[in-house]
Length: 282
Image (cartoon, rainbow, N blue to C red):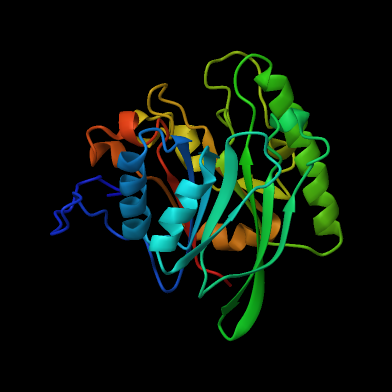
């Protein structure tokens, strides 16, 4: 489905079954803005539960969670998952859903909770996970973000990126590593509309330390790759730190075109498509 988005028939009465993206060898991380979740109540929650269960990703970074209880109810039905939901957002919460048997959260923080203007009152949600691979324990720092859109969005995204870059650089200087920053960045990496304005110079100009794993999708400008299809833009990005550059060389990244599976996707589920990055730890 990631490559050609062909629905797979299922015996389930709820509709088509989405092919799994799970792999024993890889870690799969999905970023997904589920618009005003759940925008159509039970219809939306049933679809989201089916999608998450079928995709079977290791970690979901979600944005625009309006009803925390509705998401918690979904996770309760999915025995393999647990969820951490931000408690500092003023509205539209951030959430990280993860496979509880594979990942152990050891630290959680709402970054910039006391200085969240440039993040539109949605301070990034950091969760540090401990996991085992190849007989060794490793850490994975996930930061879920939802940047400011519209109006003065460019300037606030610019400032937010600078703040986040400074924060990450200080953490890395002290030895922290393996940072993955998925989310709704609310802008293309590149100047897609030729406005001469960029939001993410702090990271684009720091290529020795940071890289967008979604760069190849963002660069195509192809409608089939757009994460925000109504505008044909790619605004749901995944940033990684230098400690994951080697993993990124042999990783895969894709837009999951669920709107080609569900005809009413945009009206029932979301105006954003999920984006997945899958990599093999080293």
